[in-house]
Amino acid sequence: MYKINPDRDQLVLSKLQNSFANGVISHEFFTDMLCITLNKDIIHDALLFLRDDEELQYNFLTTLCGMHYPDKEQLGVVYHLHSFIHNHRIRIKIFTDINAPIIQTVTNIWPTANWMERETYDFYGIQFEGHPNLKRILNVDEMTDFPMRKDFPLEDQTREDKDDTMFGRRKNA
Image 1 (cartoon, rainbow, N blue to C red):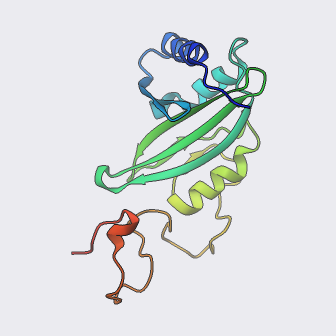
Image 2: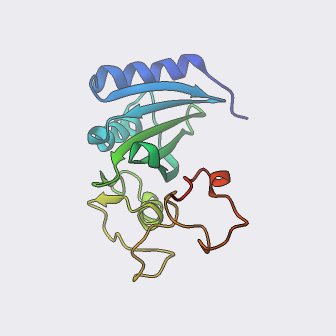
């Protein structure tokens, strides 16, 4: 069973701050997991560090997914990492401008990121620089929109019986 480990959380945070001083933007705790927000320019190096550091050994990428903050004109990527050796999990977040959503791929660190990055591209439009085969995975190739962005219409916009604000979306003007 997974248990919260404040000493390990502090070790991870200290090592990241020492190795990437200007790259650690913030950190916080959500329920049972340390969440660290990094500068997107260091994401590849930081994740490689987390995997290869002898004391940390985050050798498993549990998940990678996108997120959209329409009020901030930002897209983001969340990485959940797990160290099987220490039975410890962390969450890493990065943000990018919605008009230039380019982030370095981590497929050369964890090959399992391949399909997760493709799905994130397909649904959010985040481009993973260096990805070996970045193309749509679930939507049709001809699609020009990204359906998980909150500005994507949920259904017929002429309907009056639905309220997009219930889904975290802005009301159309």
